[in-house]
Length: 127
Image (cartoon, rainbow, N blue to C red; front, side, top):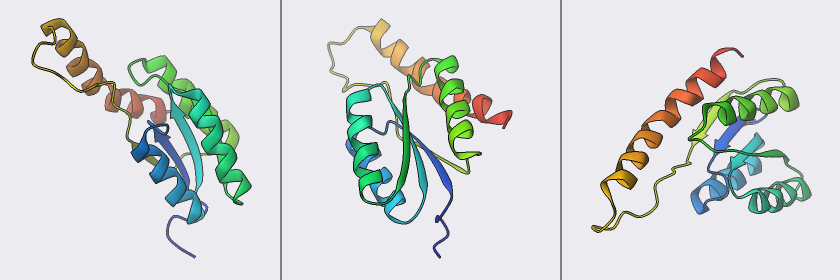
């Protein structure tokens, strides 16, 4: 039995390439994965793929820039799997930044990127 087997892993940004790879790897090693991201279609396909391969996966839309969304994501994971053991935070609201991007856009990216880990901690705190 590996150390991750039967652990419940919540993955933010699960529709990104890195998030998908993490989900496949962890589910393949026996983890139960909770997938969250804005790309709900990709989450559905990934969860279906994991379940078809014999793994355990559930998904929910997630916007890491919104603390309420993060809370709902963790609540759903807890309801479905009974707990959350590990969080893999891959999500980032930051697109590639080009030198001509406005200061306002850069400020939003910095604030929301910094707020995401705090929202995760607050969401998991009550569980």
